[in-house]
Length: 45
Length: 106
Image (cartoon, rainbow over all chains, first blue to last red; front, side):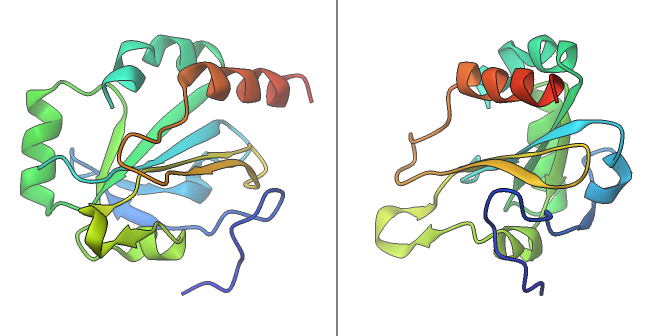
């Protein structure tokens, strides 16, 4: 667990998960390259 | 999710990527993702490790998880957050576009 508070201008806590296609995706992998829209779903089902 | 899919190209145009995280197990999530031909990145998080990290709220008496949207800039900083108070409390695309446009001028 991270102690980083989720407030604007703070660094976003990094994570790595496996996506729907089996690729490892980490937030830090986009650094310097793209702005990220991070969406938390309520659940599809 | 539908509104994000519909206007995904508008996010791409602004140099952004969408990463969506859901609480389902990997198989259920991937099946749904493929069935709906979602164009962006979908991450199943059955352990809820990332949603906990980001403090996604779970309201037991209000049918579960509340939706949340954040924008992380290229330096890895949080620049926008919207934590829903209800299932339908989701940031409008236009609000996200405006924030991305602002980030792109920095």
